[in-house]
Image 1 (cartoon, rainbow, N blue to C red):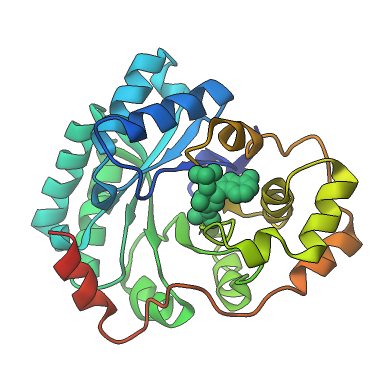
Image 2: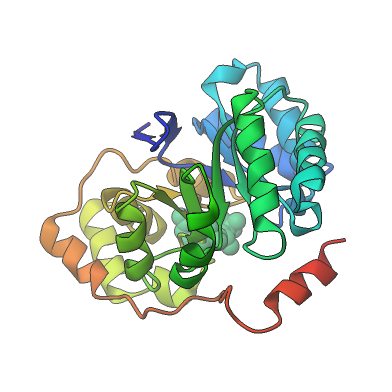
Length: 280
Ligand code: A2P
C-alpha cells in the first residue's frame, strides 16, 4: 500500500476504508472486518457515524497489531469548544477501545472551531492523537479559520471526485503541504460518473472496473481516497489499484470531467443549523 507523508511527518495509507452511514451493531463490524481481511490498514470513522464501537471491535478481533492500522475519527459539532472537545475525544477513544487515534478531525467548520482546535492540539502533544486535521473547509472557510490556528492541519477531508476536483482548494492547501482526503471519491456511487464513457473506456483498456479507474486517477493526483462499499468484492477491488498506471493523456481526459460542483456545499445557508439539529 502506498503511503503518503503528512506535513507533521506522520505517514498515512493512501487508500482508507470509509464507513459513513454503515450502521453499528453488526454491519459496520462486518464491513471493517472484510476491509481488514482485504488488506486495508486505514479506517475512517466519525463520532457522528455512530459506529466507532463496531470499528474498534473489528480492529481488536482482527488481531492485527494496533500500530499497523491507521484509524481516523472526527469530532462532531455538539462537542465543539475547548472543554467539550476534550470530552468528545475521550468518548471517541472509549467507544473505539483505543489509547490513541492516528488522526482526529474537526468534522464541520462551524461553531467554536478555534476552541475545539486548541483541545486537539493539546491532545496531540499528550499522544492521544497522532495527527490533527479538519473537514469540509471550502477555500473561504479555510481562510477564515486557519490563520487563527497555531498548528497547521495535516489534512482537510472534503468531497472530491472527477466531477468535483476541488482545484481552487487544492492549490491553496498545496502551499502549506496540507493533504486532501477525498470523501465520496466515487461520486457517492453516481451512475453518471461510474458509467461515463471516458471511465468505461479506460476500465476496458486496463481490465479494471470503473470504480478502480476513478480511484487510481485520484491516487495519481496525490489524493488520499476513502471509498466506501459494503460489497466484499468491491471492498477488495477498491484497494487493488496499484498494479497499473494511467497515462498522462488519460489523466488529462479525466481532469476535463470537472464540473466544479459537488453534492454538498458547506457554505449553503442553514447547513450548520441543519447539522446541529440532526445529530443529537
Ligand atoms: P456498494 O456498497 O454496493 O459497493 P462513495 O465512496 O463515493 O460514497 O461511493 C460509495 C458508493 O459506491 C456505494 O453505493 C457503493 O456501493 C458504490 N461502490 C463502491 N465501490 C464501487 C466500485 N468499485 N464500482 C462501483 N460502485 C462502487
